[in-house]
Image (tube, rainbow, N blue to C red; front, side, top):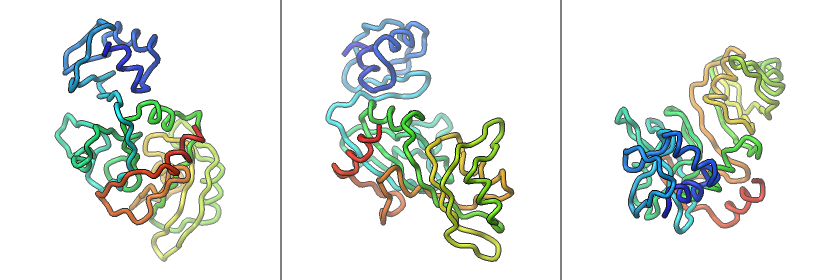
Length: 235
């Protein structure tokens, strides 16, 4: 398959944009720089755009992984740290993670080989709701909850209004559910830091109407047709 078509089919860019990326020297095949859009990509070859591997889908596959702590959400890590790919070795399709969860964060991570689906799911304009359960230090007062709901400055950026609900307040910690449609780097942690609370545990429990449920840490399951359609309808 021609390189520009391969890139376009992953949903990473349009055919025209793929040409621009190739000419700009931002595409590598098997680790080697390629500047020819019509380069023929063979089966099993690795294509990376701006340093990140992309995958052209054959038979489309959609999975949910309950990411445990200690794993990096990427297909490969230059520092040799364990990645979520080690948790999906039994999956016959060549899937990749949609979006990111930082190393200490656990919970729902979509794995797929459908580039168009992944691109749309991550794009801010679709405002896909993501639900998190955070265990934080200290007392989360009503005033703090109100600030989080309204939006807080997380360092040069004020977050959009979010749905924030108290689950449990203990003497020295609290469990809070946060629902937001943004995806800034470490956003939930930064939001709580802005109101003087440290996140001790963070789990993503849902994306849209797709829930983690009772899936154990490190386990993976196929998404149901209803789950896939529930997300596609919102994209």
